[in-house]
Image (cartoon, rainbow, N blue to C red; front, side):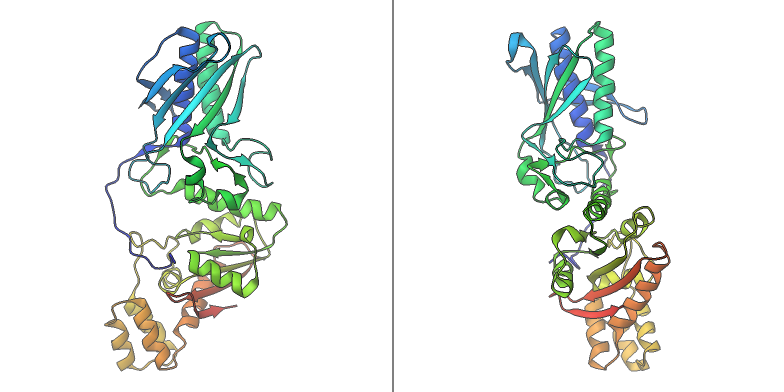
Length: 366
């Protein structure tokens, strides 16, 4: 159950996306084929113009017909961003072909799209548009520099990617067999969690494309189970938003649904009630004094409010209120719902639910 777990801060060190890794390795492999040059690093240009050099783990010929295939690999460095691919080996196998242009293939550890609603058609390897463009631009520039008129077949893989993908939202999005090759800027910003937010958006898009109009956005496993039990929603309609409720509500402006149920731990929902759209502890904190004040609006006397302000956790404050028949859970959900309604587009029916640490509903606003 991941609904009120402690988090710790970490140094803010940037890293590189899997798209940057794929670009560097495909470039190095293609250069080996066209020039015979091997190196221990590959320099690429990121979408915003920065030049960066990624160290290569290997760069070698890999058989194929008449030496027309080569491969290169690099260890993904996500910096200090919480990324499941950090430390994974990302590799590219490149084969020359007569036809100009670049063809993309999913190697071991890279998934294939099986559901509508993503930016890629069903059946395509899960290599997103920006990484494809980065690879195409670099390989085209290399071909021109080498006077080569043919094209390239590029296979991208991630060692252990099929197992790593089970820790992501890919199976729910209908991406099977491995990870997605992601990235829009080429750089992973510490704690920007851009890949996670992109997965949230994709989850909403896939659910809509497959006909689902009632979605539940949940902070973790326990809140997902609560919504599954209440509504019988299938996995595709359950959006694992983590702490990024703002990402869900804002995306609805571009991709509206008829009904959205938001569910999370009581402490996180109380942060939303206070106007916070990122519920992570490094960004927002639980305000026990505010909870006591809200409880006062629903009948809590001064003694109860003082006890709540002195509580160790939001769950303790909630228990104190409920022991005195003060419906603090409902009060917090009503305020959180008001905040959400102010962000989501008109026409989306919004519901708010709060659970305790074992997954029991402790408040709602319908």
